[in-house]
Structure formats: structure tokens, C-alpha cells
Length: 483
Image (tube, rainbow, N blue to C red):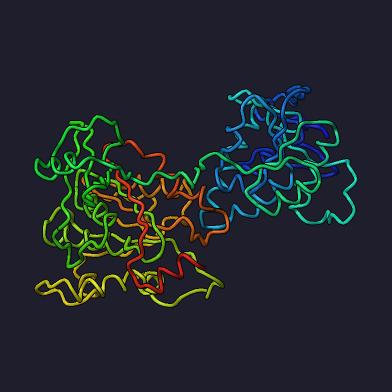
């Protein structure tokens, strides 16, 4: 390998490469050859020393970059290793127009920026104290039965080779099968825990408390009572008077440190009435325009989407607090994809939005409003707008009631993109069931909805409720519990 006289070309393996390129993938390749981008004019290469013993070596799988493009910054004061085959897979994914393609391009640009500081083949020191390097081959003989022609296996074998060298290796992947393979080879395999929550301890938005008969009667009579226990803003309490078998609902107001009474009989919202305590909490949050972000989590049939649409229609048509209801959901099929759909945008979206139309049709059957007879009329009058999540990026949405259904199929980065679109005087509602995920890259703990709930807990403009009781039908409830 040699640099030519003008310092912008390299001969490698009989080929001449022009290094005056804006292609980040090519620039990464230049860095792997041991050449520092900033020293090309002199023909010299800058190398960083190899990391010594006593540190952990984290081998990063491709899917971790797809989940979080700058994931290497999560590993401090250790060695971060990227097998060359990870870059090959990112190079293939970068042409995709979906979130995978965007994250692949972001990851490549990020690695290219790090590669400008030194030689990735020898190791580049990062701001977090770790050293990043790319391994281009492995010397260890593959174990019997391990097919080395598969990219996933090649990535695992790179980790295996480091382990054979006596390094303390951790294989980081969101692919469960890849982790199982690595574990079978004696490699410590871990999931990428950043932006991951403990789903078993997910914030519910309310607590049930045994209270005295005096506390219950005071809250109902006075509507507000002082509350000594510090709770997150907009947190609900279900107070149980066990002696008189009475239950009452309260909402914590942080600014005054008081518990506010929530009545049992709430007025109907667009013809929809709450059927249980959790639905009352949800409607209370949805109808409060001081709460700009609401998340509703629950299994199928708990009424998440119905309540959100009903509240949006009432606050748009009757109270005139929002200009329109914007509804969207991820376009992720359950089962085999049926392929491209004909028609204009709304015609294409209508198939994916059918569950929303089902809720709208029910609301139209109980919501008696002059001059509004159907869901199609609401759309024609621009009261409701359907939007594909792909087109939300870059938009600013002021004064709108925004509903994102099936948000459990979104990554934390996608949720950030959506919520950051909300303009002044907008309200964002995200609904979903973390246990019904169709995206192969997410699970109950790493999806954007679960992450958002924990990240926003304690914010004054945020409210959350976990709905537990299915009200769709007895059959739907049994299916959710037993299947």
C-alpha cells in the first residue's frame, strides 16, 4: 500500500483509489487502510496504539447500529470492536428509504467522523475514553458446524477470535439467535441495554392505596385535600375504604401538593363514557389541555384508541381548542406483507387505518352532531387527517390533536422524531400494547413507547395510564389473557 505523489490516491492490492470522495463508506475504507484523512496531503498515516490488557472488548452487531447509530458512545473506557462485515451490512442497508436506511446512513457518517481522527484498523480514541477499532479478519479456526459464509456467523467469529486471544469479550446484539450462538461458543453475549426499560416495572400512572373512611369522605366533600406523599405530576390514586367497601379516585397536583377528586360520573365525550377507573383517568388526561403529552398503554380491547379519538373530536369540534385531529400509525403488517397498494396516499393509508375507521364508525353511531353523519365527512371537512409516519419528519404541527396508534412498533428515535414535530398548543397522544410488537427489531422493553413513558415520568406536561381491563368483549378479554 502506498500514497501517490499528490497525497489523494492510494494503491492497494493492485488498485488505485481516489480518496477525494464524499462517500462516507469509502472514507471508512480509507481509514481501515491505516490512513488518516487529515494527513492525506502529506502521504503520512497516523496510528493510535492498540488497547492493552485489562479492558473489556465489546463486539457490536449490525442491529445495534440500526437501533441507535451512535451506540459506540455507550461503552466507556473500554475497547469497542466493529467487525468488517458489520460495515458491509450497513452499506447494503444505507440505500433503504425506511428507518433502517436512515439509521445505517447515520451510523456510517458517525463512524466516518471518528475515522478521521486516526486509523480504525489500529484503534481510535473516542471522547468517552474508549477505543474504537475495526477488525478485518479472524485467525481462529471456526468450530465444527459453524458456517463461515454467513455474515452473522462471521461477526460472531470475529468475537470468538478475540476471545481466543485471551481478551474479555462481550458480544452485543439485539438478535436473540445471534446471542444464543455466541453463548454456545463460550462468548459472553448481552443485549444493548441503552434506551431499554424494565417492562415489568413500567410506570403505571396510578397507585392503589388503603385509606381511612375520613380521608375518602373529605376528598369527596372538599374536592381537594392536602397530600403528604410526593408523587409524580398527574399521578392518580385509587383510595380504598375497606371498612365501608368504597372506592374513590384522586389526581395528584404537584404545584399545590394536593389530591384532586375525580368524580365517578364523568360526562360523555363524543358519546363515549368511561367504563372503569383507568378509563376515567385516561379521559381526564385527554381532556386536560395543560397536559401536552399523554401515553395510554394496555392490552387489546381496553379502549385506548377509542378514548383518544373521542377526546380529540370533542376538543376539536365542540371546544375548538385544536384545528384538527391528526391520526397516524406505523405501517407494519402482521404476517406476510401484501405488497404495494394502489391509489393515492389516502387510499393507500385507508387499509392500514381501518382499525381507526372502526372506532370512528362506532363514535359516529353514538355521537349525534348536526351536519356530521360519517367518518368520510370528517375527513372531507379536514376535521380528521390521516398521515403516514414517513411524511411527518420535517413537519411542524401547531394547534393539532395528534394521535399515534400502535406506537409500540416505533423505536425510541422514531418516537423522538414524532413528538418533536408538535408545535405550539398541540397535544400528542401515543397508544399501544408493548406485548404486541410486529417489528423484528424491537421488544417490550426497547420500543419507543415504553422508553417514552419512563423518560417523561415526572414532567408536568405529561400523563400516563396503563389500562388493564378489556371492555371490547368477554371473548376478546379471554383471548388477551389466555393466548
